[in-house]
Image (tube, rainbow, N blue to C red; front, side, top):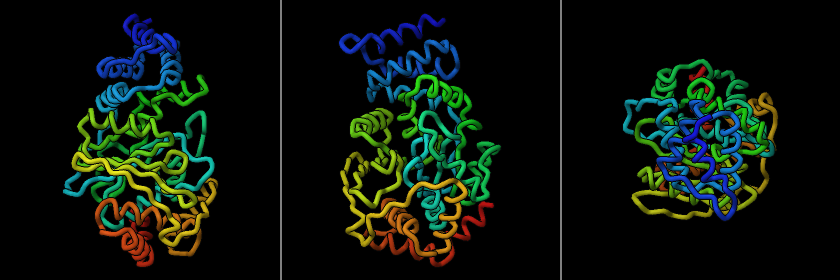
Length: 341
């Protein structure tokens, strides 16, 4: 048993009136001790559930992010002046709505935007459809690659995927605790914030609850991350919805701007494509990349248009949506998928 870790546990697990938040350094140390197995399984499980009940502070999240940056896999900077778009979506996958992020990544890559995604296998307790299974259904196996190969893919094809079990096995070692405690621990928030990329980048973090967004913004500030975006997307992802107004935060040059976007104002119906199996999703994606009309394609255009606008490839959102249509209609996105094989 770690006596040092027991003190961290006592601080966060002392109850509603007496529990205290950890300092940034304490949170970093506690996270490293959990990742490296210095803390015992009983201590780790107790900490996770106590921390969930207490709710992590932004300072604690900043310290936890320090630990992930210290021990996690690192993708070296590519030989390009263009910023890499890092998409931070929940690792526990999707169970209601069809994921659009993989297609968004392909279209943006075809437009010359490097995109880095990260995630793992099916994650307790939600066990939703993860990105890795969708990529596999498309014939792309991101497993078994070295971090150098991830960098090469990002540099050559503008698209890379960091696979948690392969590239951050210490974090993968904590996954089983989610099933045992029956709840998503604060590490689930950390996964939305973490970026393995070491160069110029724009991190986009999905979220569900407003306090989570506030903590993300404040933790990023402590890390002096001056450019990022937050998206209240479907199921906590970075996929913009069509059936409701999207709440987006954009941080640039020290200024935080709140943006609300409604797909209806840009000619899209409110219909949302439903979740499907990985193989069925692959069919939807291939159909969309071949520009075959569908509600899924409409969601793709809505999302791609937003990100093309966010990254400055078009000055106005309608122009960016039209540009996304051009990329798909011209076969560039389909060719990008072919090049990735």
